[in-house]
Image 1: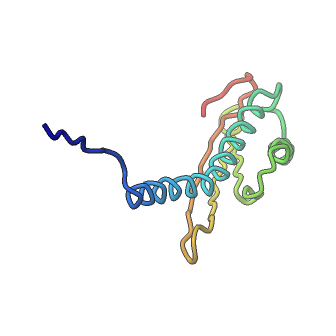
Image 2 (image 1 turned 45 degrees about the vertical axis):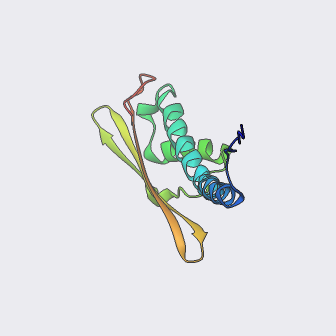
Length: 129
C-alpha cells in the first residue's frame, strides 16, 4: 500500500496576502487611534467639568477656561475655542463641542473624523451626555 499524506497549510503567497491585509488594518488603526483618543479626552473633560461644584454659576469664559485646562492635560490639539459653544439652558449651561480631524493616510487620501460631544452643566455634579 502506497499511502501518501497530503500536507495542508498556507503557501508563501497566501501568507504574504494575509500579512498585507493584517498590516493594512494595523496601519489604519494606528492612524485613527489618536483621533478617537482625543475624542474620549474631550468627553472626559466635559464629564469632569459637569462634576465641578457650582459650575452652573460660572461665566461662559470661566467654563471654557476650565474645559481647555482639562484638555491641555491630555495634549488635545484639534479642539479650538471656535469649536466650543456654551449656551444657557434653564438654570445651567449646555456645552457643545463640534470639531473635525483630518489625518493623512497615504498620498492624497485622508481619514476624516467628525466629532460631537454635548454635556449639561447643571451644578448637581452629574449631567446628560
